[in-house]
Image (cartoon, rainbow, N blue to C red; front, side, top):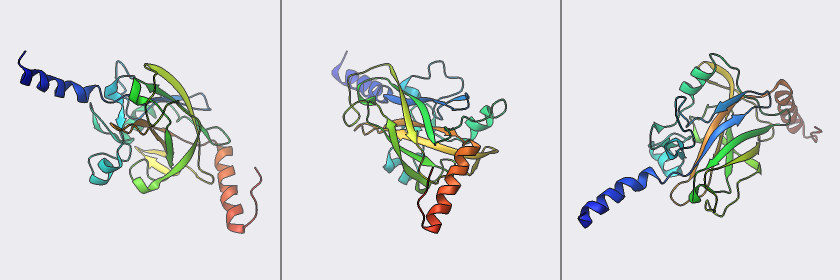
Length: 222
């Protein structure tokens, strides 16, 4: 093969294998599970690089991607179509009563590692970057700045909803929606994904009580 042809082939292949970690599923405290929002509902292999969201702030600012990122296969990631399809036969997954979100993150190879950052949007359904609030990752993925030795490995990741947050977005005709987004710090990424969920009645009640306590200047007792 001529060297120039080899280089052209290599340049074609590299973008296809550069996305290496994705949120494949959210597991609701109510027993309802749902694919991550970058996972096509008819995807044969939801663990593939084609389902990884590339979530770069520069892409979001320029409009190349939504606040949920973009994929090499499907372009901009949005929540509406996934929720329309899913909600026809299912209720949404819920966070736990104390606001813990549980998701499955699949590390495809080295630069899909952790640690992951998380943010939650309770008002825009993942359409507005400034609607996301930083959230604590309780159970994370090992790694250093998005790099680590694992490959084709599932990790359970848990995220704590920001205090006082309620799920108030309407997306694809579904009410009371929150969006959780996770991503790593890989130089070729960041890589990650997002998922939709809602709150239990108790979780919402606790969040509203937290807000009331804050307005009144009194400590919140869970």
